Length: 152
Image (tube, rainbow, N blue to C red; front, top):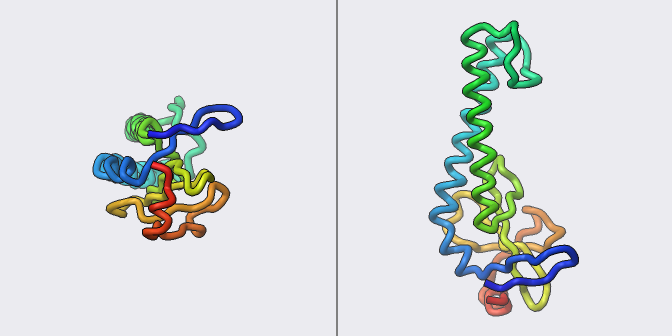
């Protein structure tokens, strides 16, 4: 592990090997997040069907029937687990870039400049990086030359 001093805090810089070592557990965790997200979306659709309108809140109201009240409670618990799951990803050092597709970046450094080591759910290893101000569309392959330039 390497750290770099930023203007306000210390960033953990990861090597490709460090991130690759986390990918099995990261993949399991993000996979669960994506399933939880799908369950939440299905629950919201069911709530909309039951109430006739899209919910503005999952808070219980006096007008909720038993079925609506149970569904709202289940959705609140799913949302809590979903948020906690992404917090676990952050504790590993990942920065969640797009939870809808399971996109997680890690700070790295190439030839003195900070970059994102970019991982997307379903990828078996870190194979891409991009500049800090670029998104998914700016991903570039971690070629052998780039790998040699990475600070480990």
